[in-house]
Length: 112
Length: 110
Image (tube, rainbow over all chains, first blue to last red; front, side, top):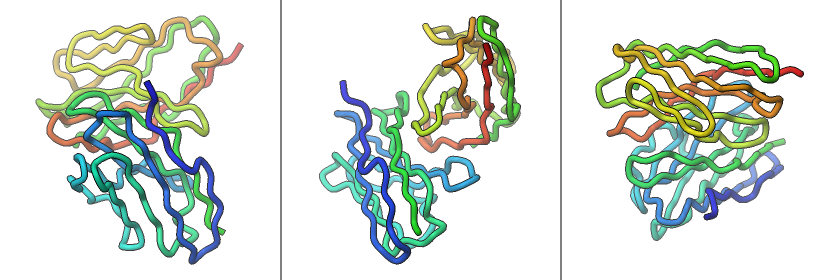
């Protein structure tokens, strides 16, 4: 069974550009989460989808970040415009109900 | 969500048993204790989860005393490949958000 997959694995963009990260959760998982770790900091929660609905987006840093999960399957996280402080690794995770939360390998973003 | 406290780092040698203790004094009734392992450039990987007493799987054991204010992850006979960061997390059954701390950086030497 495929795990949580994320694309791209690495991305280098210039300040002011737009980047879209994609996450495919484990098949059948209704819960999808985004987390990120910026340089020198701890992994922080961004938001949580239940199917296509945003259950909790309390961790989204500002309105330059937009997460979507149309159809309740894969999700995208768009950063527009990207700033230097957005550099870091963005993790996607998924779970079914209250069961174990599984993480993807992360999308490494560098803004220059 | 309950805050967790664990040692920043630990050192061990191959073949030894490693015990990492985590404090979670404010754990709530509906909270579970969950441990993840993370290698460099990879996402956190689930190791084990428990509510009370002892839980064992093929990778590790988790010991939780009756008051549940702490827990100990036990890794039997570690190898070099167990060098990683280990996160102790409290997971509430009603809220799905995981709160990561600094984790414990385990270094296993030959």
